[in-house]
Amino acid sequence: MPSLKIYLAGPEVFHAEAVALGRAKQALCAAFGFEGLYPLDGAAPGDGLSPQEAGVAIFRANIALIREADAVIANLSPFRGPGADAGTVFEVGFALGRGKPVLGYRNVIDGYRDRVAAWNGAPLGKDAEGRPVDRDGLLVEEFGFGDNLMIDAALIEGRVPVVTHAAPAGAAMTDLSAFSACLLRLRDLLAPG
Amino acid sequence: MPSLKIYLAGPEVFHAEAVALGRAKQALCAAFGFEGLYPLDGAAPGDGLSPQEAGVAIFRANIALIREADAVIANLSPFRGPGADAGTVFEVGFALGRGKPVLGYRNVIDGYRDRVAAWNGAPLGKDAEGRPVDRDGLLVEEFGFGDNLMIDAALIEGRVPVVTHAAPAGAAMTDLSAFSACLLRLRDLLAPG
Image (tube, rainbow over all chains, first blue to last red; front, side, top):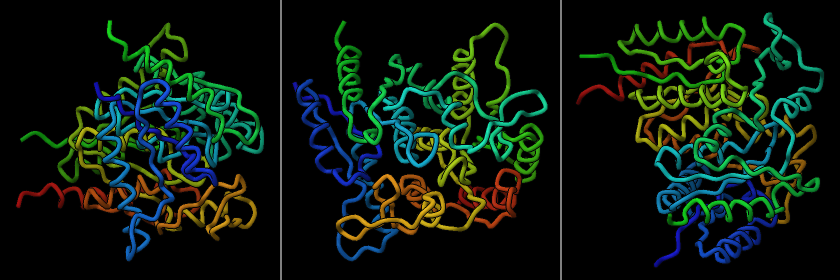
């Protein structure tokens, strides 16, 4: 039986050790009997392309890998702000739209509200109904999730809620313990019977 | 012939005038012969639910609206950081995964790289290959797009690139001129022949 293919979504493609991180994730996949499909957004997709053409080529390559995959495991750790990387979130949505199982992990354990408060740089305000608002006056979700509700609720609906882990500072892209936990959960989810 | 239904994705659901903004978008849709489907993430989905259950209920309601929609128009303006709102990006990915046309607008005209540089709080660094990196040492994309390549390339592939507009400061959630431009482009895209 061919191995099930897992698309490895996450912003570690932007890390200096992106290639090695991909190999490490693929090795962990193999240990569970899966094949890991790893994107590499920083790779040069070909000579003679304009930057935008190169970007479109990487988009097409990533979409082709997701279409080929049987499931997705996403690194949903915060990236340049209080929430997950936009490219990863796009891929999670796309895969769920295609009906594929998606699991995810977050290498921090605090809630989205607390992370927005830290980003805000000042205590959150309150709207006319007493609900928390950020410095732009925009409502802050209070569902007890670790990110925007569309992400966390999607994974709850998929039967494996986001796996959270308190990684050491600076290790959100490199700590693979929660990723390994996702592989274990995925093996259980896909197990017959 | 029944009106085509447009799902109205965007972080204006978190704005104090969220309900009025939804009505204004729906009125513009109607002027083009479309029906606008507007989510309202801040709405209480029912009594007696825990916060997380309420979040899951809103997720289900939004997904049902996207499934019902014939197309999506997304407000991709920056939200709590250099890039678009995660919930909106999730919905864009989901709709594209379902094969639905997605258009989008961004109420700023600067590039993603410049916005990351502003967020960074210090000049961007360089990696060993001379490519720009942020304060966490993570590579900054240089494709000339206004956000993560998965978002902007997806819309290029969909034949209507992100519509950008220099809205006045503080009006990224309320300025609907680029949204109106998307309606015009969508009408052209869907026109027979």
